[in-house]
Amino acid sequence: MALPQLLHSPQSSSSSSLISHKPHLNPTHYTKPTNKFFTPSHPRRQRRRKPNSLSCSASSFSEKHHTNSPKSDDVVELPLFPLPLVLFPGAILPLQIFEFRYRMMMHTLLHTDLRFGVIYTDAATGTADVGCVGEVVKHERLVDDRFFLICKGQERFRVTKLVRTKPYLVAEVTWLEDRPSGGEVEDLDALANEVEMYMKDVIRLSNRLNGKPEKEVQDLRRNLFPTPFSFFVGSTFEGAPREQQALLELEDTAMRLKREKETLRNTLNYLTAASAVKDVFPSS
Image (cartoon, rainbow, N blue to C red; front, side):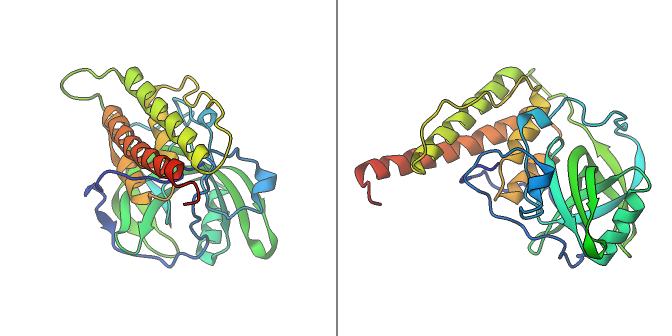
């Protein structure tokens, strides 16, 4: 699911390129977001979808994403899969793997812990140094030794050192966790509820502009705690991967929710203006 149009805040400069190696990425191609907000993940049907579109629902996001969550000061080696998209904790990512080096990586992972790092890359900014672990929850070996995977986002990480670049990237990483906000204590629940309200308004106006019935929007938060809800919101901002990357890198739930609130407010203002124009000039 994706917001139909995002007018986001200025990009964060924190997404500096640590990894200078820019591998040729041909296992997937980035897909444009649809007008649907969320679509449920269904492995059998997803084989016909473009392979790297993110799909998630609020129920996918839990307070703990992995049963053995690592400590923030742990340093581990992690194979990396650079992609032109941003994976968030709790989000579902279908992938089809056919490039030889990544097939090699999958053969290794399927005999170990099924976890690898998804890290955002593009031609303009290079490869980011913050990403999200993708854990393989379903897999199918296809013809010609290709793989179809369903992955779920787990912990965030920061690359601290490249271990090797061939046949695929492997790096030492440390784990990222949100820290308590400094200064005044934020009412995170109230802030999350505000963000949900803006999301509902954006969906309602988007449906109106697209000629869809203005149905009452479902409960989007579904009792999620503020931190996983903030990841859920960020995962809906498809089509704005640099903004998503900036959200992923933030280590403060309140800051992430405030930035998402501003993005949604800007989007709502745009949609409100577009709706007013449509009312005055119905044929436009």
